[in-house]
Image 1 (cartoon, rainbow, N blue to C red):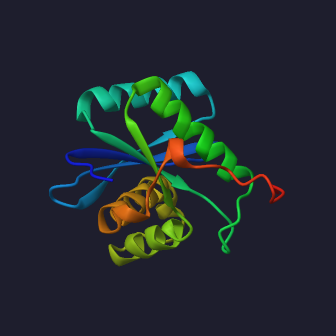
Image 2: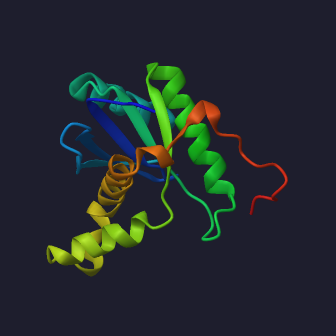
Length: 157
């Protein structure tokens, strides 16, 4: 797949969504913000504002799975979120394996001296940054959300 220009990335969670931004021309992701709360409409309104401000050409959503790659309940919720983004905003949405994004985020924060409880406010947006950076480094590994089929043979936990 070929994407050029700005991209917004999301580390989806039921209570928090980390958001990062970057541009394919530069290939460097930056943490942007973390949305708090579980209410759908305020989340999507803020995302709409960010899309209007940053005018991305595509969106990336982290795809959470077990360590062995099998899906679980958060996999289903993240895919649902990605499909809603595509439906609402008409932008191509890619799914990117996020299995190690939280570990990468913690390491990046430690590198700049942010440790322990001080990490929590930034962790989700730095995880989104790690997701987006992995998209920039290996775009061929991303899956267009419309091409993703959630395995039904594996029970979700």
